[in-house]
Length: 487
Image (cartoon, rainbow, N blue to C red; front, side, top):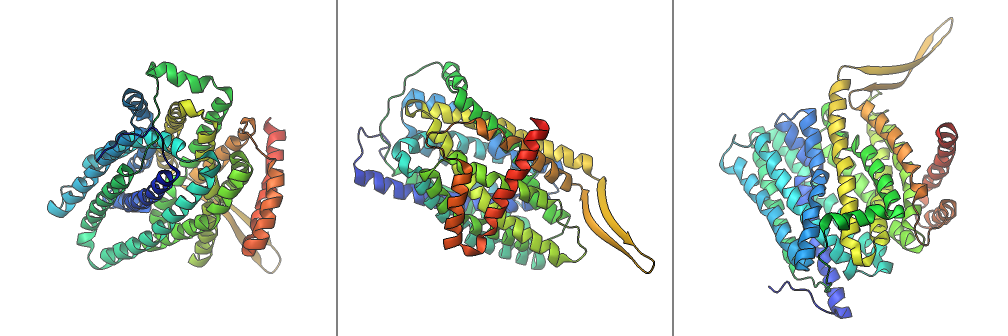
């Protein structure tokens, strides 16, 4: 197949290409679902992974982004982003099939010492392909359609994730309960399916046109200094790095906490993930529409406080002796995390694309991914070490009312093991979100104005989610107190 870029694309060619990008997203999402999230954590726990190894597995997808320099060099050398994306994505996906065949053909041979290096190569090749893909999409999708297109694409991908995750969880729980000797082989079959799905996604990208762009062959490190000298982009890097560090010190251990501390079956955990995904699906198009109309920065300023409140709420999970209050709290947390993450992740991607000059898009985006990757990768490793430190330690807060006839005790909160990580993550996220105000984005609108408009939209279209507005306003008071105290 001819993978050479075209001098000019017709509207019909561009629209057909965008449809293929959506299909690639679906096949890639299937691949990611089969090999990531709760499933890879459950597989690692089955293979007796310790906290540091769990943190390393969680860190791998972002750790390898520092190698996006290779992608920058390749794009400058060959001026063919489509070929680089397709070939590197294929290199990322074939190893999944190979490692999946190991437990099927050679039971007992698969170990963490083999799995982790294969995952590293998988994520490494994917990172190189991803940097080239970002630059390619920057030229293929008009700026005024970025939010709407990726919002629609993400909604389709998350819908697939919901359906596939539920089926996989039910199947794995059935195998675990009835045929535990086949459990590892089941994960192997999932890896084979993931690799196959990813290869089909690569074929979709191969059929997507690329608008030609000649990029000068400058010194790589000289080029990377350019985005770092851009004061506004540098402020975005500072905020983004602080945010991903705060989030990733806790987030990778949510599933570990539910599996190990609460002993929840995989189907329950995936059920909560589905709640989060459905929440994202129902709101991501609204976030995308408001991001295009106002600004990505404003959307982040609205979604971040909701996420911080969710991190704090994790500290209260498991404090009740009855299971149903804990499950109810987990349901609310996952719904609100899905809602906030939809806006935050979409806007973080779009604001990087928006602030990057068209001529240097791959340089700016690669610099952003490399810098944030360092902090995003360090966070789960730090979280794993902290989890080991807090093992066997706890902080318990009770309130007691005593009278002449009876005494009543109220269990307020108990922090132990992973709960400490959730509190630390919330405090660091609170610090990070205050750095957002220094970033300037063209067309940004005051957060309070957009909150009022969004509250009206929510009231009219999603009346049952009116609590969002209260959370938004509640955070403003917390932020003001924080700024008066520390700034």
